[in-house]
Length: 75
Image 1 (cartoon, rainbow, N blue to C red):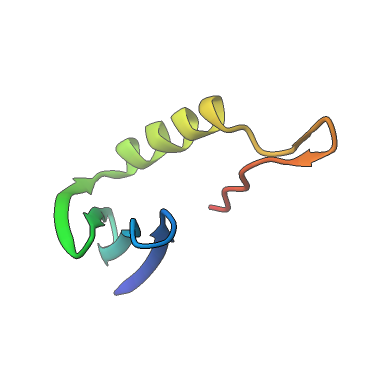
Image 2: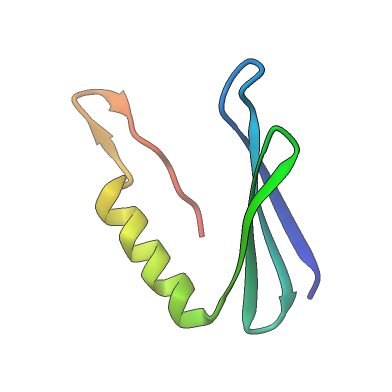
């Protein structure tokens, strides 16, 4: 079940990384690092993942607004 997705965030020399790792069937590890230093790692249950998806959809809904592309999140 090992699967990992890395997102590079920030710009220029201020780049960081967000990593999602599935290491068990029912757990997801979310790690955040900035300039090579790990800031935090949390383990999410399926319920936490559901709540995170709901929160992201409330903050940054998928779709288009006034012709501008909005943040697209794919599950």
